[in-house]
Image 1 (cartoon, helix red, strand yellow):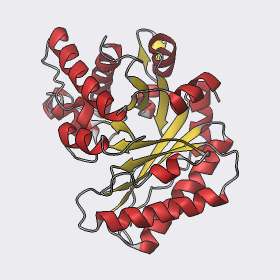
Image 2 (spheres, rainbow, N blue to C red):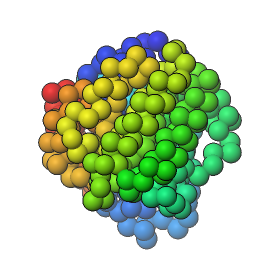
Image 3 (cartoon, rainbow, N blue to C red):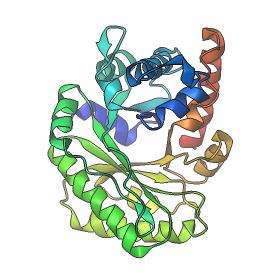
Image 4 (cartoon, rainbow, N blue to C red):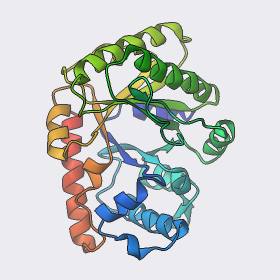
Length: 295
C-alpha cells in the first residue's frame, strides 16, 4: 500500500470522482455527453469515445487534487493511456489524484429484495494487475431494493468476503452496498444495512483497512458511528440518481460523509462544448460537490 496515498485518503479534503461507467452504462453515459449511438459501430469504437471523454475530464485544468482525492476507473481505462502514460500513473504522478479500480462484473438478478454481485472469476488476476498499475484500491457495487433482512445480510456477507480478499492483496476495498433511493422502505433498509456492517466490522481483523460507498441516508448522520471505527478509512456517498443540487444538499447534512459522484459530476458536460465552456462547467460542478463534502 502506498502510504502517501493512504494518508491523503484518510485525512485529505475533497471528494472521489466516479469515472467508471462500464459496458452496460457506457452508451447512456455517451448519450448524456452528447454522442449518439450512431457515432460508433462496435464496442471498441464505443470505449474509445468514452476514453476520450474521460481523458478530457482528467486532463482539464479544472480537475485537480485541490478538490479531488481520487478517481474510480473502469478496467479498460486503467489499461489505456493519457498523454503517453497509463491512466493510473497519469492521475497520481501528474495530477496527484489517487487511482481506484472498479472490479465488479455487474449485478445478478434480484432475489430476496437485493441484487448481489455476479461472480468475479478473475479476481486474483485483476488485483495483481491493479497493483502492478499503481492502483490504490477497488470498488464493487451491489444494490438493496427492499428492507429484506435476509437479502441485506447476503449483500453485506458478499461485500465483506470479497473485501477481505482485496485487503489480503494489498489494496483498499470500497464496499458499495447501495440502497435504491426510490424504495418506500429506504430508511428501514439503511438501518438493517448499518446493523450488518457493524456486525462484520466487529468480527474482522484489527489491521483491516477498508472504505464504504453508501447511498446518502434518510436519517442524517446515520453512518457517523462507523466513520469512527479505526478499520474504516473513509465513508463516501453515491449520488444514486439525485440531481447534483439534491445530492449536495443531502450530503451537506452528513458531517464526515464525502461525495463519490458520477452522473451528478458529469451530466452537464457535452462533447460539443468548447474547451473554455467545458472547463468552466466542470469547475462549477467540482466546486459545488467539494463544498458539500468539506462542510
